[in-house]
Image (cartoon, rainbow over all chains, first blue to last red):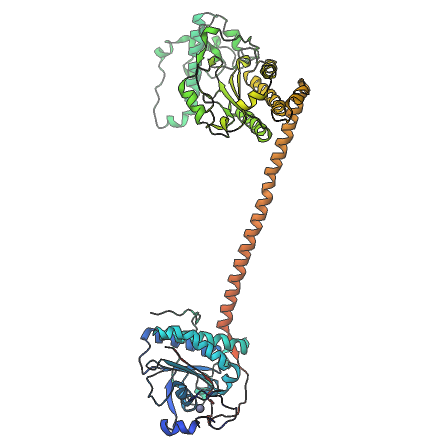
Length: 217
Length: 376
Ligand SMILES: [Zn+2]
């Protein structure tokens, strides 16, 4: 494990980084300890075009359907110099409620991609559960595959690559079973509890579109 | 039968044809009114109406015939069919054989004609266009027949024969077919016949006047000519011609000539291509009918072998088909796999195992796991 700030190796169970003293409370003192609500695709830096965004929403819906426990969120933003993208990813996973398709997804199963187009940095933050299955090496590999698109400013394609690669990696780990609509969809359950999803799915019906069929409008 | 009888015969034939037309045209009658026979018109040609030579339907409708007329008519079905010979005498002033087969005219089917050589003064020299066509003939065309004297079937047979000869012979044989009275003009260069193939390998060119095998002229490549004994070459031509003269049919003659030539060239090849020609010459046999049969038998066997080789091509086709089917099967399985994969992606969910992880760096859901890159 690496420290989000200084990228030094961190011992499991370590309460703070031995080299820079980083931990959650240090970050919370600057960013706050409150919970924030965030869309799956948050783009204050305006990196994504509308068409790209629409396609990515569809891909994310499909991704979440295939992996009912997992969500993938993306944040494009120009960050203050005092924060690195990996620090923001760390903070978001611990303090954000993402507008996923199903509200019952837990952040341990979350993957957050933070891209700072100004600093040209990109970071993956992995929840504890995902971290146990998709290693940091895998995360680095996916980032390397994304980097040509990021370099060209083709953010839509970069995110699509990330979704496809993550999909592939998790399929190797997960146990495949036929989708049972009564069990896999927790919409009904959430509605029964009087809860409404933070956001509605981009697609109400399944669309026979492979996530890899990424195209720009 | 005299001339007037002939006129009667022709009129009757015309009438018969016309009647047949009337029967066929009965359907048309309803639409197109045909002229009706009037009593005066009947009298115009009494012979045709009353005395048809050949049995058939009378030309004039029966209603117009009187009882007297009917008495004159011959019975409708005679006991024996009339013979044309009985009605056509030998003094006819035109040649019926142009229209009727010999058998119907009572002639024998085949007449052995006495073949006379073309008189010396009646030879025609081959014209330039003939020679030019011979020169343009492709190297693999062994039977050169610009004026198409040889029928298609015979041509096929001879070409195949020459093809098989040339396949395993060191002296290839080419045959140019001319009309029986044609000769090669003086000073013509024959070496360029067959697109120049004759100069590029040991060859034998025969200019064969169809029907006069004794006038066939045989040309050999210099390399062969030098090595061969003049006496042998003369005996070669004589032998071929003699064998050809055994039969009278011009095409059969040429066939025999060619087969004999093939045998002779085969022996000539042994002389010219042997390391010690004199020894080979000494052992050269005289040819008898048995040799001809052997040679033909050998060539037939060769042709059978060839056809078997050709028949083995289907095996290649089968292999080709198998390869094609395998490819199709491969493409189909890839397609099926992709389809199944897509279906699985649509209809399956992947559940990840539940794991317990000790918190790290104070994070409740994430301990900073992940990766970063600087992409510029
Ligand atoms: Zn550190």
